[in-house]
Image 1 (tube, rainbow, N blue to C red):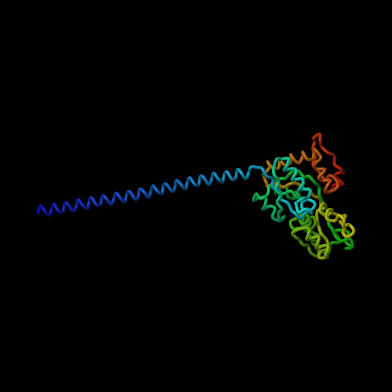
Image 2: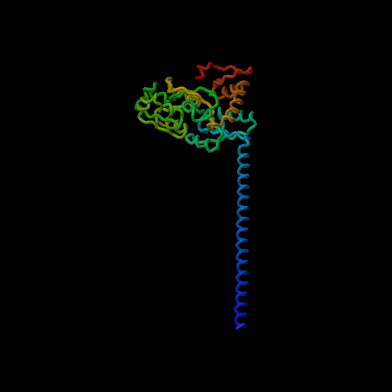
Length: 313
């Protein structure tokens, strides 16, 4: 009987020791797993912090201000276009390039689809829109520079078309650039009857196409900015004519993302310096034959306009 009890006790001790040993192993394994999880979490947190720091650094680098990216329509002479040498040129291009140089920035000329200009600006692809950009009726959509040039919307037609007034466009096919100032002017409530009188009202991506359509007879007239009209008709005055009756008058300015007053102020100050030392007038005379500037500066170095403001309009 004693031997039986001893055997039972011995077996119980063995099982107890075995159970204790297994519990310890499980605990160690669990502890190891917890430690590994903690380690992974710490690594992830560290990596996240590193990514955040990298992102912040990239953001700071992207906002370093060493470039000035100008959005423009490359098919809008004389304000922005591709020259005979294959390089971007034009009145606004030269103005923006000189402005960037004086601000100590590298100019980046970014051609854009005109109907995508807002998306380009909001995404940060460009810093501003500087390309014969009308501010009228858009005052609340952008942060604007002061207007630097007056402009009017006119109609071009063939000289032998028989069209001499806006009323003569009744039943005719009129074409504009999509999202242009001419389109906006004709679709304004002040021109409801005029627009309704057209036989058709077409929009194209660029004015080069519109002029080809006019030349081929596919359209009867083009509504367009006066500056572009004069540039396109140079040397072709015997074939085409600009109607004396204008559609509307407007002003050009530089458009920045709404709220970006810091960059606007920097550009505005630099632009006024170009007015004061005569650089604006020189570039203007190169493309228009006179000073189109409407900016007024009280500075002692202010240049006088080459023609009265009424003639510039």
